[in-house]
Amino acid sequence: MKLSRRQFVQLAALGGASLATPRLLLADGQQENADDIIISVFLRGAADGLNIIPPWGDPDYYKLRPSLAIPAPGSEGGALPLDDLFGFHPGMENLLPVYEAGDLAVVHACGSPSPSHSHFEAQDLMERGLESAMDEYNGWLGRYLDYRRDDSFGVFHAVAMGIAAPRTLAHQASTIAMPGIEEFALLLPEEDEDEIRGLLQAFYDGDQALDLASRDTLSAVDELAAADPLQYPPENGAEYPDTEFGRQMQAVGQLIKADLGLRAGALNLGGWDTHEGESATLNALVPELADTLAAFHKDMGERMSAITLVVMTEFGRRAYENGSAGTDHGHASFMLAMGKNVNGGKVFHDWPGLGTSDLYGKGDLEVTIDYRSVLGELISRRTAGMPMDQLFPGHTDTGQLGIFS
Image 1 (cartoon, rainbow, N blue to C red):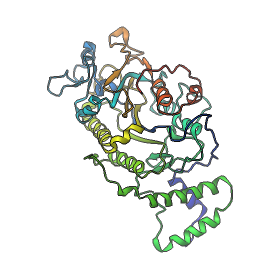
Image 2 (cartoon, one colour):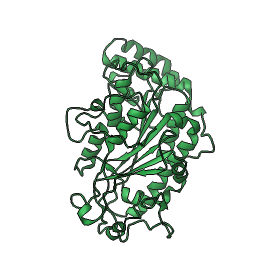
Image 3 (cartoon, rainbow, N blue to C red):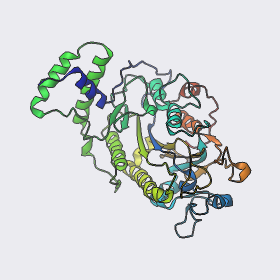
Image 4 (cartoon, rainbow, N blue to C red):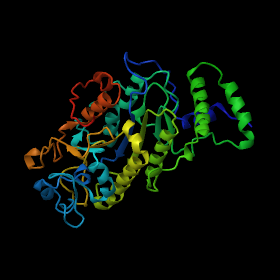
């Protein structure tokens, strides 16, 4: 049986192997394994922070959203109170104990200062850690990995759950992309596997980038099979939702338990573009997000002392509802940070208000906390660190908020 060069390139893409050559960028004095495992969850479609983390204590919220606003705590379908200003969407009930235990922090009126209302552009800029376009194509988490890279980094140091690696993890070394653990294989007929492997090893025996990437792919498939992450069931009574996102988050936990050297992971949950019928959409998506995060927290148990998970979205929704029971593209939204080294049980904010004179542009929640301040503090406090001007080119104002211990 023959396998063409083009076919194997497609197989190499299954592993998300980068064609760039890695380089050693470990800073002086940094200690091996001093870093948290960082998990990035991106809510694609611009999640509405004003209804996911409703500011029920701001009376202007109810003036702007007479039919869409989440009712105040104590009312039917009311917000789950976090303090005297903010609450959780009622679909986040299973995540509330994580917040109350101090392992989950909320950041509100947070986002990118970029004025873009384009999903594609805003996602691209946020994943690259930029405010405006410039010649820097690696992701913010990818630049961190390049800076920390040393000989201890294995092929599974960066894993994206999905068919392709997001910009967040773009860097000079390899990122493994997999829809799920079961799908990460060469998918060859058993009777032909040895023959095809021999042909591939002979065909790609040089030192060019494609040769190296191809050999990395074969090594990754073998390493995953040997570790057998599927042998690790959820622990501590955790139950993940039976959804793609739930299964992928469980897979991340299995990769961590299998001790494959994961340093950073990325997942996506889409569907948040709520121009119409927002309530029904959030009533489905918010519990999926919250229940999955709660299951991961329970499953990881004490491992959360060395794991930090962050949730972000490209921008928020307009402060006032539209005529289609939805909200249009806005500006600020929210972030979440979860881990045992998060100073949780608190909403971090510099609330700008929702009065007419307080709104940004055509009627958006103002960004008062740059998302890079949150991510910069994460890298500074939960890893051995790196220069902020290298993590976020063109941006140096990453003041600490005290989110991470």
